[in-house]
Image 1 (cartoon, rainbow over the protein chains, first blue to last red):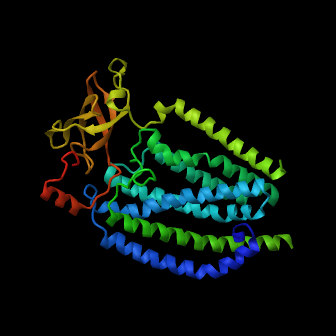
Image 2: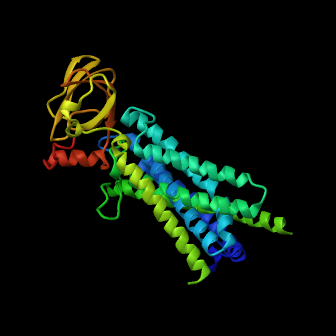
Image 3: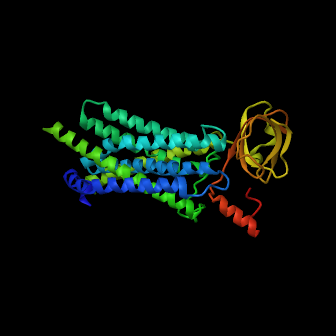
Length: 232
Length: 146
């Protein structure tokens, strides 16, 4: 597992897995979208609109997962002085921002027909909007600062402070009254979703994970190269 | 204790402190963070006339009355208390008796809530429409789910 903390080992593993990951993401997307549009049934309440879920939910999960990964790498970078942690932070932030944006846009397209509004300031929607702003701040902080060492540390600390928002996003629907419904899939109870709708959701989630990994590999490799030229 | 372990401890401790600070703030402002009040949370003696608030709950069964094509009257309930709501406008597709809804508006007197906006709330259950038909045909359909 050294490739998760060592740039040159990461480069080697990344070269092996990049093409398979890219191909599997394309395959998973085609299967997943066929399932989502043609093979999955209409919902008993929402009709066809429920198909937005197959984009909305995976992107929301991935937005949170990306931030959680950045948090772990920030801790690794600050506490254990692993510079690869800072490389990941710089490379992965825009990916998380895009997933958050997809989640917000698809969510508002879903909200208009179902709730009757594009946007409300309830706890879930507001905390996700804050997550998006945090991502944007990280991206802009990465573009500022003359001194790379200072920038890396400041960004990592900012990521750690922002990670407080993650449990709030996750549990906002349980802690407060919100227009957004509570989680369908949780560890403690049987999911309240029919298997015929669960299948495309899982396939789409893996498709999103794969495309996320593929883009991350490209961006991390670029970041490693740019740092090498920075040092020499 | 090694230096890297000290740094790790410091980071985790800071995170815990920040998180508990934020959660304490949010916990103590939960009445404002919550998007709506349920009917039983509203104290009849505390009602301020014409102040915009949001209430949420289920549309009470057999309470929906269509006064004209765009004017409606129904009750919002959380099974402990219920509030009479009047609304003029277009209702969302999901709106029906037994369905969750969030109503924005103000009390015009102690008992009548005049809505300016109606949002439908949907639950976290997803089920194919065909299964609903099967259940209805075999008589296993629980009429509580609309």
